Image (cartoon, rainbow, N blue to C red):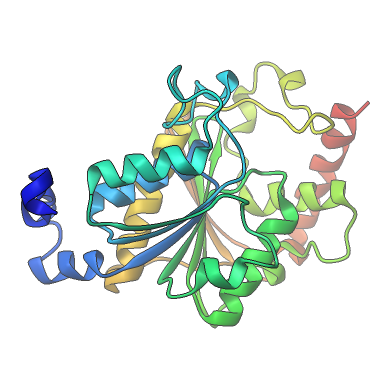
Length: 291
């Protein structure tokens, strides 16, 4: 393959050396990540991790690119309208690293294929749409069962919120506490858990752009780029066992617009009294968007 394409792994990722050792780069080469969702954050995660030299990818998405994706999704362009997102992103990953083992799940992730999606995976990277609560719960529960580190980096306003679910530590369900809750309450709890600091809230200049009835909200490319940088660094730390990465109930949020960084610690997750107060604020806002 190298003779045909001119590709050389060592040369392609040589500029990573210094921030990682040669041995660590080879470990990244042998590592496999699973990324569910290939839209705003998921696509950016895939390309960032491909340029890090990750050697194995499991990519899942059932959707196709549309014009309204242009503001934030790295795979969207006039040339890719109507094409499956997972197909486009797989091509882009392979164009960076032709040696990469890329396996696509064109139907997204469901109970029938979640085992295959996570088989042999070292880290799970969450890129699922905010409203896909059931698929997200399925994936994080399966990661916990298999002992797979799982991370989510949420694009909020012009910033990023990071949560790390470490095997053996607090689980997704223990943190968010959405089991048995009505859909609207699940959304409220997911927002509160993602963003305990709510740094993005003060500069939402068009509140009506957030419409939970129509399952849509405002987004920015800057947030997706920040998510990819934070996620890529976090995945590196998990795979190489380097540096501190605080697991849930810790959460980190950085907002570029407000130039603020916040770490929050919520023992009990959404059962924490501070989280209960936050959800009291969030619930009326969600009801208002549905009126």
